[in-house]
Image 1 (cartoon, rainbow, N blue to C red):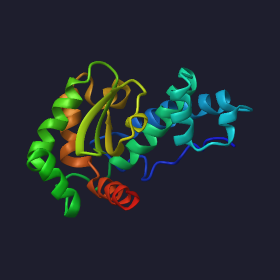
Image 2: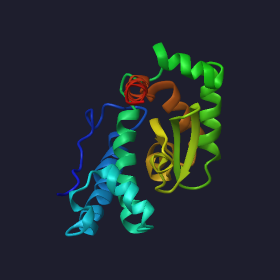
Image 3: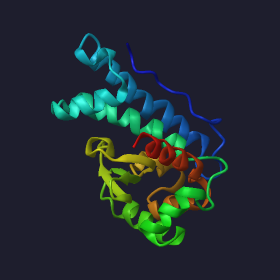
Image 4: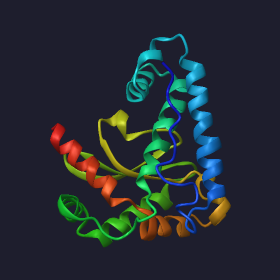
Length: 202
């Protein structure tokens, strides 16, 4: 059973002018697709072949199967990223998520400052995440293909800070890219759905 390459959850130009259609053509259509294609080639005929993507990530991590892990995690991370952005994004969290944001970071402004610092402070390629741990909400970063899943944490949303995610639109201005994500694209509804699902599973 192969891992499916997912469609974007919106039109390829839906995030313009903040993320261009050309960026998504490369980021989704080439980078993301390459991870899925390489993963499917690597797991064909192996014990991973009939597992879910999450199971592949955890199993490959435990087995130190680096090639499979990197492609599986990047396939999952990118799918999660597309949903972490919305054409109608931005604003502030609502409901229970707003309460947990307040408990963890003081308020939405405190979250924004900490998330931006984390995203800018991630040296080289990687990801900035809002996750739910046993102690509440936290902002974490991961390098390269790493994922909070391997630490037992529940991702609520993410931002890709690999240069291929923003270089066509922002060149070396990662700070402008992060600001745009927080101001215009962040999908609080998706984060709230992930929080609710995690609460219900507890």
